[in-house]
Amino acid sequence: MVRKCLNNVCVILMILSIGIYPLATATSADAAEKVKVPVDQEEASASSQSETARDVGAKYQAEAITEKGKKPAPRTTKSGFGNKTLLYAGAGVAAAAAIAVAVGAGGGSSGSDEPVVPVVPKEDPVGADLEGDTWHGRLILADSGFKEDVTATVKQNGRTLEITTSSVQKYGKKFIGTIDRSAFIRVRDQDTGQDWTTHFQNARRNMIDLYDFVNDFNDLDRLFLTRE
Image 1 (cartoon, helix red, strand yellow):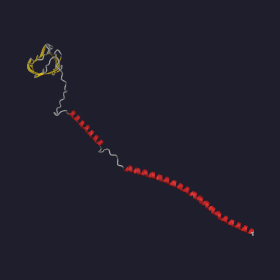
Image 2 (tube, one colour):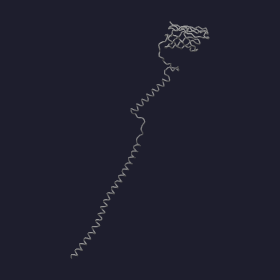
Image 3 (cartoon, one colour):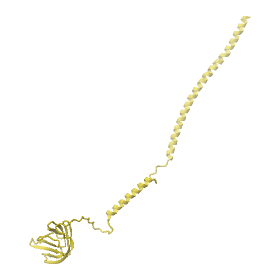
Image 4 (cartoon, helix red, strand yellow):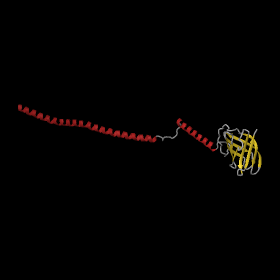
């Protein structure tokens, strides 16, 4: 009787062990599968995030290039205050240049081609004050024996003299030269290039007596002037 009971218990235990082993195996496999699934999901998620980041970067670059292409090209002129200032400055320079060209081209409204005589500062007379337009006298030319009554104008600036007569002869019409402190005059005839001097007596405020040797110093041309 006891043996029979033991046999029955053994049979029951064997049946239970057979049933439990597949269940445990299945449970272990399920647990392993459950452990493996999160790992695979994590790797898949990481891969998906990497691909997403690349896609976003590529999309950003494409958008940046597109936006840059849409932007208008820089304009070289604007209506701002700074550009107006440059415009006004350029106009001022152009106006100044135009004035300079006009001054250099003409310098006056007369349209004359005569050269502009520079203004020389006026100096006090040296030797004697001879300037004036009331001189009168006689021009005597030894070669021709011609004697001519003339009037004359004298310009003086310091020691510089210019004497212009009313003579109609070949020379004796204009003299340019100097006067020193003793009133000795040396001037040159502008037609002949001959020097005339106050040979016998120096000039005075109301008298000028000029001579030029001719014919190998045998004769003298003379210009004698006085004024009241």
